[in-house]
Length: 212
Image 1: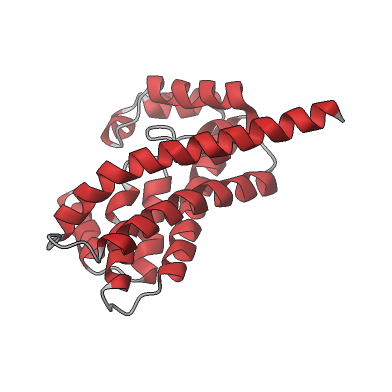
Image 2: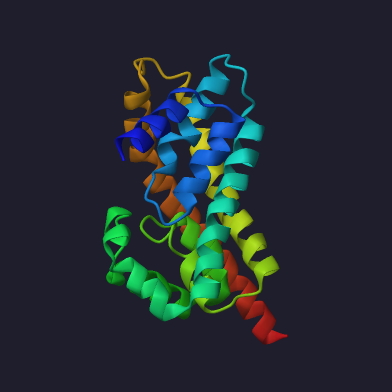
C-alpha cells in the first residue's frame, strides 16, 4: 500500500494531462480520492506559467472522471446488488472506505432523484464517487449515463479549475497544501450554489414538460 501511496503522491507532484486523467479516474471510482488536490493545483500551475492549459485540464479531468465512473457502473451492472454489497462489507471494501451504508445512501439518492441524479450527484460530497453504482445496478442506459456524468463532472471540474486559476493571483499562497485548503473552503460553497442552480433549472424543465 505504501508503494501505491508513493506513486499517487508522485503523480500529484508531477501533474500533466496523463496524471490528471489517471488521478481523476481513481477519484471517480470507488477508491476515495479528493478531486480538489488534482484539478485546482493543475489550474494554479497553468495560471503561473506552467505548460498546462486550463481548458485542457477540465477536459482531461472530466475524461478521467468518466473512466472511473464507467468502472463503477460496469462492476455494478454485471455483478449485481448482492455482490456489490458483499464487496462493500469486505476487508478490501473497508480499505477503500466503502461500507453498506454508503452504498445504500447512494442508491437511495438515485432512487429518489432518478437518472438525473448522475448530474446533480456529481456536485455533492460523499455521493459524487458512488452515484455510478446505483446507476449500474438500475441498468441505466449507458449513453445517457455517460452524457449525464460528463455534464456533472464537467461542471464540478470547471468550478475547481476556476478556483485554482483565480487563486494564482492571490498573495500569500506559497505551497500546494495552502492552495488545497483554500480550494476546500471555497469549493463546497460554490458547489452547493451550483447544485441549487442545476436543481432549480431541472424543476423548471420538468414543470414545463408537464404543462405541455
